[in-house]
Amino acid sequence: MSGRRPGPVVWCAIVLATCLLLYVLQHMLWLTVPFLLGIILYYVLLPPMHRLLRMGFSHNTAALLVGSGFFACVIVAGLLLMAWLSSSPSSSWQGLPERYIEGGTAFVRNTLLSLEDKFPVLHQAGMSDNINARFSAYTHDFFTDHLPGLLVGAAAWIPSLLLAPFLTFFFLRDGGRFKRFLARAVPNAFFEKTLFLLHEVDQTARRYFQGMLKLTVLDTMVLAFGLWLIGVSPPLLLGFIAAVLAWIPFVGSILGCIMVVLVAAADAPGDTMIAYSAIGVFIAARLLDDFVFMPLTLGRSLRIHPLVTVLMIFIGGSVAGVAGLMLVLPLLGVVMVIGETLGRLITNPRLRARHRHAKALRQRQASADLLP
Image (cartoon, rainbow, N blue to C red):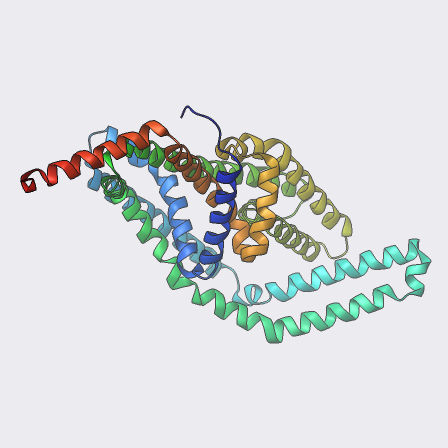
C-alpha cells in the first residue's frame, strides 16, 4: 500500500494491543492452543485445497476431501505408531524416563569430576558432592511427586487438542464466508482498503506459519544428520521433536538440547564425548538456524526489524510466560498489519471526506419525505 510509514503513535498502539492480547490469551490457553494448531494445519492443507479447486471441485467438496485425507493420514500414522510400540517390550518404555534421568545425572557427575581434576579449588569446595546431592533429591522428588501430575495434566489437554482438526475443517470450508461477513460491516468509503487489510492479514499469517514449517523441516534435517553422524538414535525423531520445541523461543531450544543430551548420555553412559558431541551438533544447528535459515524463512515472512523482534520476545515472555514466547511473533505480525492499515485509513483525509459525504447523503435520503 502506498503512503507514509506509521509513526510512533501507531507503533505504541501496536505494542500495547499485542501485550493486551497476550495477557487475554494467556488465560484462554484451552482455546488458544487448539486455535493456533488449527491455523497451522489450515495453512498446511491450503495448497492441496487450492489444487482441488483449480481441478473443478466445489469449495465444500474440496474441503471435505482434504479434511478426510488428512484424517486418514493421521489414523494410519497412529496405527503404525501403536504397532511399533506394541512390538517393543512394555517394560522398556516404562523405564525410559528413569533411564534418561539417570544417564543425564551420570553425565553431569562425570563432567563435575573432570572439572575437579583440572581445578583443585572446585574439589576443595565440594562442588560435585553438593550438586550430586541436589540432583539425587530432585530426581527422587520428580518421580514421586511431579511426574504423575505432569502426566495427568497432559491427559487433560487431549480433549482440547482434538478441537484443532475440527477448527481446521471449518477454516477451509468457511474462511471465505467469514471474510465476506466482516467486509459487509465496513462503510463503503473504506471498503477497498478493508479488503486489502483482510488480504494482508491473511498473507502475513500464511507467510509466518509456512515459513515456520519450512524452518522446522530444515532444523529437523540438520539435527537428524548431525545426530546420525555421532551415533545417537533415533536421529530423525529426536531432530523433529527438537525442531518443534524450537517454536518456543529460547526455552524450547534449551529443552530440545537437554532432551538430546539425556538420550545421548543414556545410550552411551561410559562415553561422555558423545554427549559433548550432541551439544556441539545442537549449537551448530542453532547458529545455522539464527544466521541462515531464519532470515530466509521467518525473517522474510514478517518483515519486522530484528531489534523489534528481540524486544517483543522478551516482552511476550514477561507478559504471558512460555505461551507469550510462542504467540508473540505471529500475533505481532497480524497486529502490525492491522495497526498500520488502520493508521493509514484514519489519517487519510480523502477517505474520511468520502465517509462524511456518504453519511450526509444517507441522512438526506432518509429524511427526504420528512421535509415540509
